Length: 172
Image (cartoon, rainbow, N blue to C red; front, side, top):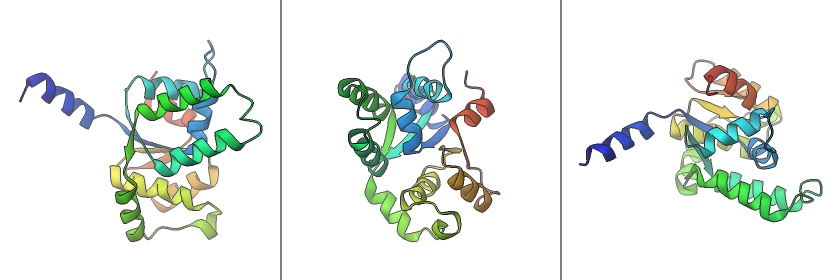
């Protein structure tokens, strides 16, 4: 095996793994370039720079695309710009096959929808974290953060906002 290929593969395998929720992807898509960057914009730069291993799946890509094209507030943005940004984010995330995600979902016992008022897609964040052994689930959904961190307090994975993630990991 070529030594450079081996080093490259080992570097990728040791990269910090994260799961990104739809609401954060939307913030990343709509975050403008500016001197005073938002946490979403900084996260976009980190993901686009391949400085961590970000995961998503078709559920979140489809949900994000649907919201972008149907929400009246968001649809005012120029379509080519938004589509370009979304594609750039998705090109730098690892897309998990829905077959493996759904198979794991069937065996997944955690379902706090009633207690915490989270939706079905949020449970998939936990499923993906389990499959990938991600260190963080990044979301702006406070009920999900509370539900996940309460349930998995002894886990190596935690849920947090983009701002908290950037402050904890000191990526910038």
